[in-house]
Image (cartoon, rainbow, N blue to C red):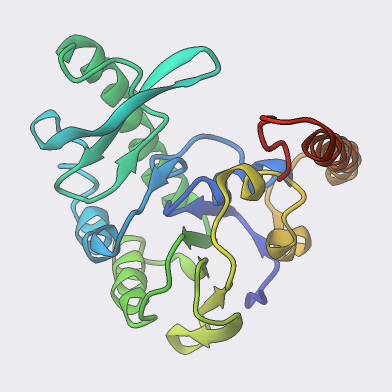
Length: 256
């Protein structure tokens, strides 16, 4: 994926899945947590609501009365995380709310963390000169929806040079093309988004981020050295998984 420039003051995830936050983190391009880092899109509703969210400063995002548990809680690093969907925005929050909805007090504590991330987003973007917003979805959609999102970003953050990159997994065919008068880029990928695979450093579809630079980034040489170690560790893990699949029965799939 090609972008207009390669150096930015800030790279922001607009959600869709966990890939953007994970891949920017691997490459030293993510300084802090922002509200949509781990927000999931199951359909086009969040895309249509995102302009309204941006314009309203996320005022109604994840209000208690709009939330419901769309599937049972799952364990994450030993802690049960509730799988909640915001009926207003359509975003699914998989990593943000450990307590069930019945525990209103704990829910509000978790939402206060989300509010701080929202405030941080607006504060950091307002101070920046150029920002790359990245959206990753597990489905293909009409690029025309990006027009409204881009227009909302420009209106919400006047004076900031905005670019918008979009990764669309599970597409009918793999292709790349420019949108938004050259201020946006869409990359469609035939294979499905794989949460285990795409949040790791080894996913080649995300290698376009290697060329990016961000103001105040960590030592890129140290980060690259760390990532190469991770890459070989993942290869070893995958090889072990393949071996066990060939020589044992009932083995869990360890491949990425």
